[in-house]
Length: 475
Image (cartoon, rainbow, N blue to C red):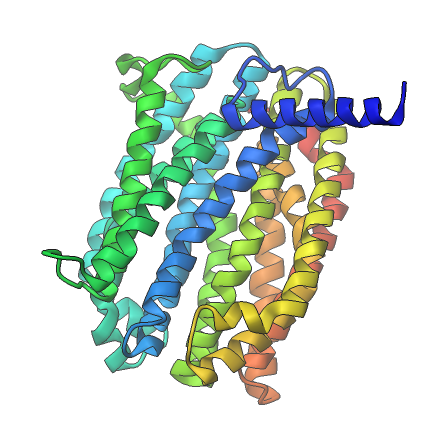
């Protein structure tokens, strides 16, 4: 066989796999065949899905960064996103539980039980968000003040916060239903829902922020309206595919009757999963507050700008690492432990390569990237420093994500919860406080604490992964 023929064969196989990944091939058995192909089939749509999730904040950041009083607008978007991480934590925790249970049932070749479990998770989501939405609407201004915003900034931005937290159900369902699809091995539907939501957001943002024809300019509030409408349309797309009956999951209205035994099983997995991300979210909230109080409005805006850009790069890596959760869940369900381990190593290797490339880009081009999102020179200076310091730990972030998803995909949600508690609350927060306050480093001390703590968390994850408790968990 000639070298040209080999190359043609390679590219032919690659494009065939790429087409399968983007289309969504539920006929592929993730418990058999090539592990590399399994990772690629899951990872490509998952990476694109998470890229789209990160685009929400960047689109808002870009348009509000060019408004009058842009430092107030950027700070409001950033601080609101920091608070929304608690809702993201609930959503991710529930979606992880749904992914773990659905994947395990699919691995056991029981799609009916998988569909029932997914629907019970949605019932829980409705109950939780009814409370959160009301609280967010009532206390929006107080939340911004608590986060360190000035009175003027809080007055300027609280309507944005009201809309964003008030529409938390859309956020929850977008994450949760995508988790159900991922557990079933159909990551393409999850990806497409985020693409649709983001395209709508990108179209609506400039129209609702700046106005167009008879549509008035809503300013900062327009960004919240655009994001909420975009996410809502994405959820409608998900719901359509859940009920269309064309996939491996066949949904019936009878599955929406509360099954308290199933709900209890889901909550048992989700509770520590939610807690692990609430722990991380509260840490990020504390860091945001610490930067706001030591660096003022410009320091806070700079940090939030850098954080949004960092999340744009990290979320695709999280998407890639999600492949480990599905593969581990399905292969443990099929009693293929060795294959589950190989899936983890393969996914981790790809994630390290991706994050190393991103680290080089942010270190070399950070200043140019930041300049695209804000025209405030003080904000730029702080944002560049924050982005470059935080990006030093990108490779460790990549490994840590795969390990967290391995534990969660296996249903072992308590292990990463414990790691997060010690890593964030007993190490990152005290370190950031000491560097910022005691050593008078201000926001720079906070920036340094982030990669140091993430590295320690990853090393702890490696230790517990090798102990192997995750292989023996029953869900």
